[in-house]
Length: 506
Image (cartoon, rainbow, N blue to C red; front, side, top):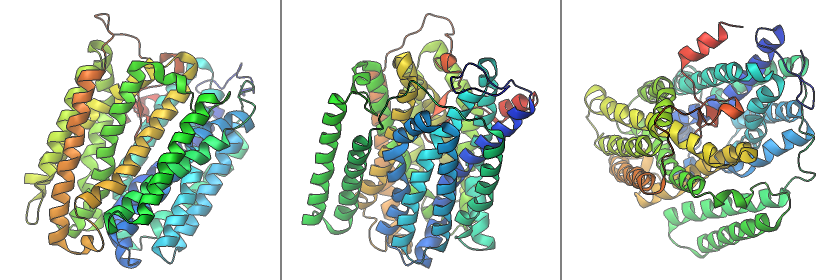
């Protein structure tokens, strides 16, 4: 049965239409999640090929994140108003065209611009994939649909480092972008033919373009100022950009406070628990952004791993996330989120401190792998309880907005950290070409990241409240028919086994 625009009907699990809708949304979101993880592995190769500095590599990552973090809330609003399938398809096509431009980029600056265009496409398609599932499936089938979607999307993110390393080794770094073209073609073909259109007839009459513009200016100004200051010090240009960013941020808050239909309802931050959880999110994900940016570069430039070996070296983190996150969410349901979030962030700090010991000549099994495992266990303990706390603390009518805010904050945190920490650690100019210089900077950066995670653990202990009744509480996602969300990618987490079992019913 097709879903109507008012959402009164929906596709039942097991119908042929269910397979097609799931295929379109998994391929679409998987394309974005795959791209987010393959680029890191290829950064050293891209830097050499395009003669990029450390600042150039920072912008290749941050160009995408900047556009995505600034516009992801608008992307969801556009889908609600103009049609979720329509905006999703536009996002997929936009992402594919931008991927083609990335694959053809002749310079680092051109690649950065194309990556920013990719981020716009990602902001359109990422919230749309889950919204389509919510709108298309009947209420009783949504949980199974989202479970399958989350598990399969997680697998796409998990194989990203492997795929990226493999494509770089067999052909060229350009293939990591060009691989999106056939995927996008398949998504569009399936979506246009098989995905029903849906929209929210009660959505706000106007899109908050002013808020989106001010957000973009604020993040762009602060990011550019941070990278510029790291490379050249506090130049007048850096100070001017930073001032513009701060001014735009203040203007954004003022606009959202007085606007009748804001993209960010400021009143939601009146919840102490919601505000505290997002503060912890910012601190912890700042650490994550720096870690994932520098680790694969360090493995290749200092330990002389191949791109494929560097990609495989980080897979245990994703494997632990897939295996443990759902269980961590259940644990938080039983005992409250405060202890898992605190212990998890402190374990992440310990793992990063161990990673700081990864220097020339150290072995993978003896040094890298133990640090990766400790870090991965800590991340698994932190993510699901953290995001579940965000959603549980928000009013029911703001649940979707709360998830989007948390997603945007996590990405903004990574954006700013990637801009700031390398400069503080001495990783500027051509540092990544000199193994000795990069090794010293990597050690300092990992210790800074460890300090951020330790601060996140302390903040969780001090600010997060437990609200338990002594028995397992219903999952706060129950009213949304979702599982625990991961702000890293914006996708709910389910284990691969859960996904397979769920798909068995199709």
